[in-house]
Image 1: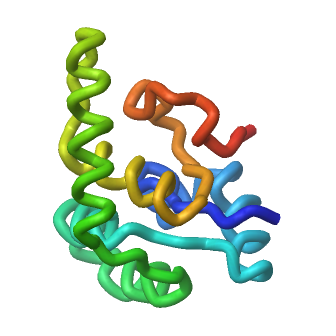
Image 2: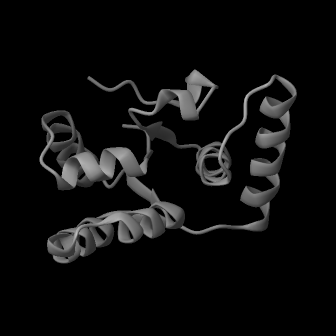
Length: 126
């Protein structure tokens, strides 16, 4: 199986017991193919509920964390500029996650498909 960077929305769905995410994550963990951007770690901790601290920590620790690098930052800037010229404004975090996937050769598992205009980078979800 190809490596997958799990977007924050899928991580939240898993932590909150949504079926598709509950089916997806164990397969990614078993295959050692579940990656998480350091930016998603930030988003998870910034948005978690008080009773989700332990589960969030366990989830983060079960994934392989992708750090930010100069190469990823440069690629994210290119992605932002490319889509801005097309009239599409993306968030910095989404551009950086997208760039991480491109640079590292991951697919992105997300339900927020509009955050990633290049659909070839996306992992099809049920």
